[in-house]
Image 1: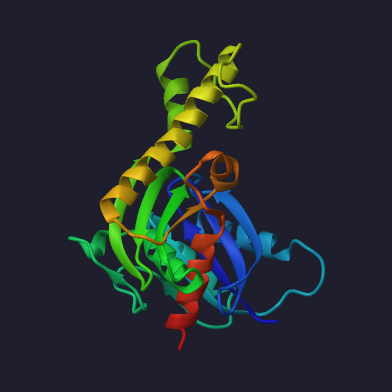
Image 2: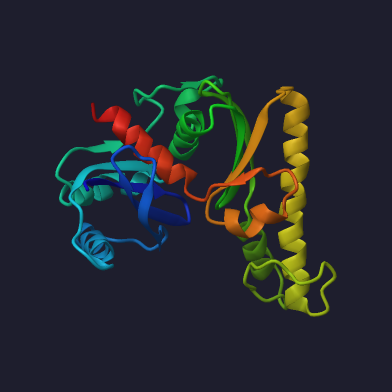
Length: 260
């Protein structure tokens, strides 16, 4: 079965995925650091190594799709992916010919991740949707049932809170982000975990309620996605579904539309 290679390039991590050609199924995925500078040769070695992992014959890769919010490395990644796929490599941006509409004041500034989240929500859910993307930042994308991006909210992400505490204080350690066993911590590490974790959970619920009141939609779906979605999503009362790979699926669906 042929597949496509997609890359979701964020400020902290880049997520690569192999998807079916329709973009509906994530076959394999890998996370690597975006902050590590890589030459074209290094990127090529890394991607070939990732693609070679696993058992069984490798399916032919018919196209590549890149969605990036870090433009400085786009050309390098495009050249590397072009050498690995049999067909075209597409960069998704606000100028891409996709069946969605960006109903905001400055549509050309909308990030590729929010664009493909809009596309995936339209195709997969067909309902007014708030896509809560839990990555470097926590974003709330407001998407109508017919694929109109109405804007949203951008807030600091989970890792930002942990990193700020570690950088700005002399005695507070860096801790792993996990749900604390109790709200009231009895050690410094668990106090930090509880403070950061539940601050984000409560911020999600509070912001979703504000958006609901502002939007006035009667059939509103709240979907958590992004790297922290499986950790945080189950604890947020307002989250209806957890879809960690919504952005990858959106890139795959975009590739199917653009490769016609």
